[in-house]
Amino acid sequence: MPNVTIYIPVDRMPPDEALAGLTEQCAELCTGILRAALPNVHIIYVAVWHGRGHPAFAEIQYRLEPFRTLPVMERFMEGLDDAIRRKIGLTARIRCFGYDASSIHARN
Image 1 (spheres, rainbow, N blue to C red):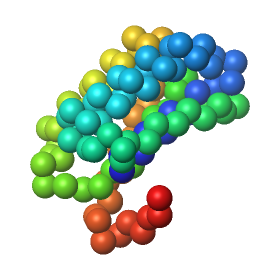
Image 2 (image 1 turned 45 degrees about the vertical axis):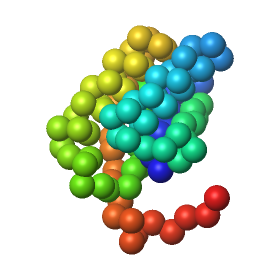
Image 3 (image 1 turned 135 degrees about the vertical axis):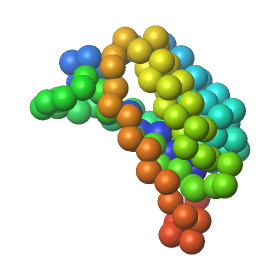
Image 4 (image 1 turned 180 degrees about the vertical axis):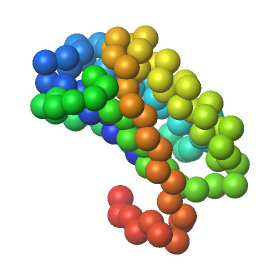
């Protein structure tokens, strides 16, 4: 963990090069600001049929840690917002969901 999922409308899906740049930036944010180990960072893009709201939606699931304070998460979201705008030209609604380690059951 963290898992970063970015939902992008099918008709606005950027080219692979832009997504690769965003992936790199997201990984840097996760390993830098959130202090996650790179092998635990997962970033996926989901093409969606857009109904209403912001042109993109970013959902981040992460393990709660004492060092992931509100100011840290604010800095992470600010960096992610900036990366999404710069790399793929979209404004995203960003939502972060933290989970206590005892509530996470995982495999692989």
